[in-house]
Image 1 (cartoon, rainbow, N blue to C red):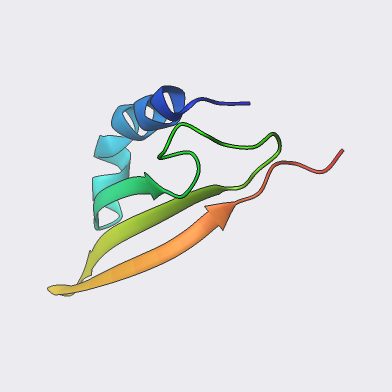
Image 2 (image 1 turned 180 degrees about the vertical axis):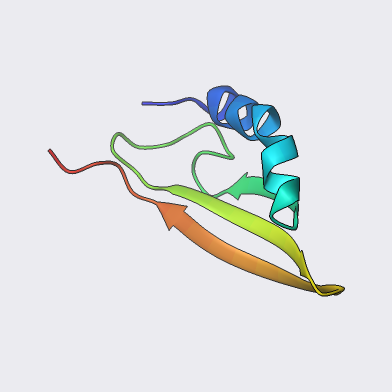
Length: 67
């Protein structure tokens, strides 16, 4: 399972790519943001995106792969 710092590092590493798609900011919320994720929990995230000079906030999650 990834840690909060590993997830944030991936986001930082992909920052240039994300900006190409109009993503201004992306961050965590929920249990991962508090450093207390339960095993096999989803990763909750929020995205601030700019489309044609309008800003949108998108909330979502990524579930772990099902084996």
